[in-house]
Length: 188
Image (cartoon, rainbow, N blue to C red; front, side, top):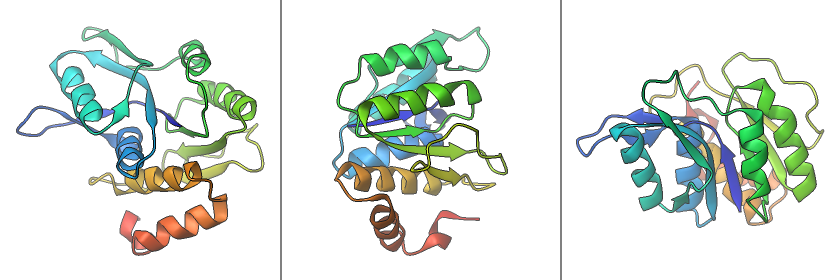
């Protein structure tokens, strides 16, 4: 199973908000590739939040550990304790994708990946430094400055699915990039 940690972002559509952003795009791509996927994060408890969760569920992305927060609250932020509890209830994690820029989540993700013997993929906001404490076998990917079509997140999801199928990191990455038509397919 692939666990993706991050906040889906509402993308307006005629049918209501669709789930977008790196975490949602990765989850959708991994599910489309046939992997079992859980999204761990927070969404606002409003019509956009409902629409995003329905979009994810309709595409095969489970979200049993996605928390809802009142619409009157600030931007949804997942806390380390929330992530720790969620990961305790999700067995058989093979790939853990940390798509949240909150550095407080990194130690929890590192510990969970080690405990589960899972591959760890960390997405960094554009230009952000690599956090301390990552294991040497973690895959660290810097997000592009702009990704309006969520191509980067989709690439991450395809990579996570390749890891979930048992490919080693180098082969999974090369296979994913080749299938995407090369690196330029994800933007700059």
